[in-house]
Image 1 (tube, rainbow, N blue to C red):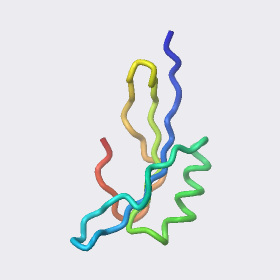
Image 2: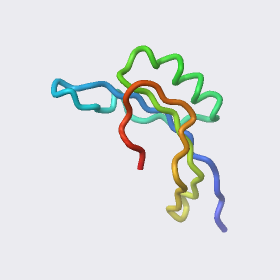
Image 3: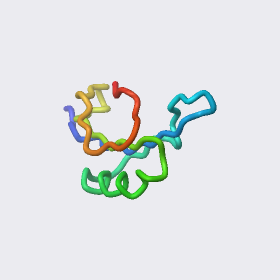
Image 4: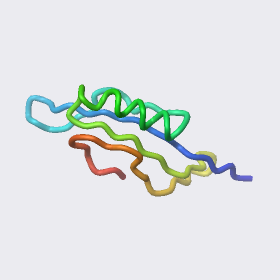
Length: 80
């Protein structure tokens, strides 16, 4: 029996010495889309880019839907 849920993630990026975007910290799983958006807005001024996104997920069978951006600011890499 599969138990689909929603994966909600917050990630931030900085530019390295070569000007490439790299993660500022490990992506953080967040409890709700509202919380992800609030947290992303709070840190947006401190990073080259910030994104909060969600996707339907059933980790028990390795099934993940396409990502939906909840909030983004600045430069972010393409989501997979």
